[in-house]
Image 1 (cartoon, rainbow, N blue to C red):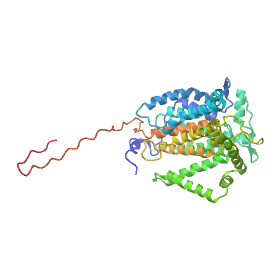
Image 2: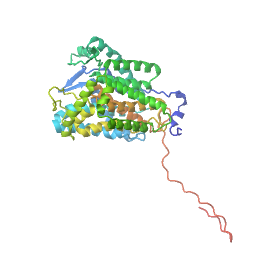
Image 3: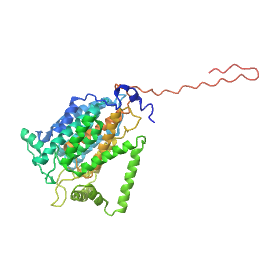
Image 4: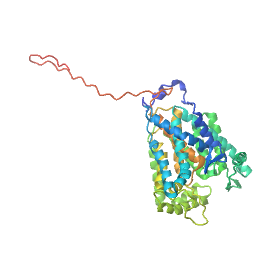
Length: 464
């Protein structure tokens, strides 16, 4: 049964409607960043010395110092609630710089490792600092999902045109034409939209489909249709599996409304099933690849990458081998590594890969899908969806490498989830005003019972 504490936010807002939807005004800077990440391809870049800045990178470069100042200010207020990712994100970015500085020098660390750290760490801090009130995370989710849906619909043009239409259009406007390598499936190229690769488009569309469940009906239908179109046009099995897992978890959540330990039971069941598969099957990874991919050949190729590149990581487990593409491999094998966790271990060492995963898990350290939170119904649903999105990122990271817009989105989603987790722990009223909790007081002294008069002589009553 919901507790009085958990229902405080909802009882204070009876006029907000049955669904409890609340959309608050976002900072224009945050809206600009969200649109730049999704809608602006990397052909709209400019160079500062040897550094190529996309519009999203430039905005992050300007906003990250400001967000750090705002976070320090917020940490000193009574409304601040600690989330584990707050303490992990900055060390993760610093480790990226340190690892590349050790393996390839300071100059390479500032340019290559610095950009990678800025995109992930900066996106997290911007979301964490600029989202401060109830409803703002809902508004940001709406902006992101609607823009991804638009890109998903337009990406269908890539399948018919035989080239990346949006990349080519922006490249003609800016004069920066990049050399794209097109992947074909089912007689046509895989769509990429504004993203750097079809699989990244598919990942963003899978996330948008999950975010659509938090939107009003009309927007939900549009986002779901547009994102599904982009997901199908990308023809990528990994994001499709990720979307299936996400919606399966949402269905499981709906079927277990009163079971707060549902996710522990689910993880236990999944662990038992995987243990049984590895125990009874002689080639468990091969079985998974053969039954969960559109083209099994690509899956087996990924296994081969893990075997070859993994050996290099074990030779330099602490700092990795650097962000170079010149790593030991057969002459016929390309330099690309189709795994976030393997590529991160190669670039920043095993500690760097672990730190990135810890940031995503740490952003979910405060639960949002229980009654004991000061969140609206829609915010709780969004918090759950963001948790699933981060889990999908972790899951897909074993067969997909994220960079560019998808990498920035991962940091942004982590910051949004951390914001909702912290916000749900702050007692607020319907208008979002802070309600101070009763301060801990020293227990009052208990009055001693008045003893009865003595049988003989009768003494005066004891007075405390």
